Image (cartoon, rainbow, N blue to C red):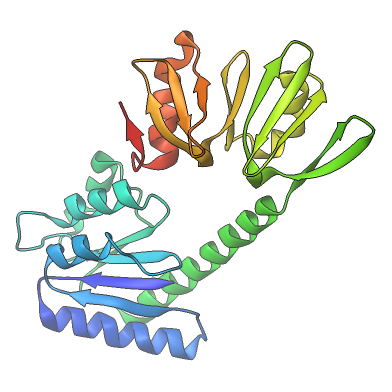
Length: 256
């Protein structure tokens, strides 16, 4: 985990930083402080070239800048929807504001932040991160069994870009290959039920992997996949798919 701390008061930044270093060391947490700063511009610069791993942003709400903490968190979310956001503030009355911004912070800490409260928060965050990582690793290695000709293939779910129905056949488009088999998209949806939040029936003839969409082209009712292949979207599903795409990607990929 990479921690980014931003507060317009340098002494608060140092206090939070020192407490965090102690918590990381004493609880043997795999984490580091990637950035500590007093200006939102430094955070905006960081998100252009983040470190490897998951980022955790600890942000003051009332920053003395054009951007307040909520605006800054929204900008972070647009680029990195999987990051964690925590707010620190002396204004408890502002604790409901993240709902308005649709930020969904992990925690809201009131200044002055007590060490035990802060430590408990970081330990809960590490537990949540490990749980998410275990789930992701499990699904990254998940396979489905596909019969093609006289052979059976264990196909890694993460490698599937999209599945196309053509006559009585299914064409499974993967990162580096294409596999054909007999069956229906309904059958394939059943096989992928554990990954229903990743795979979506965008058209009567296509199931797409949301992780591999490059561009959502609503004007032409189509998707451009990472390998530049084109997938159709049903006219009736345009609005639904747009909302799903925004929620899944945090609008970090192109919509036109």
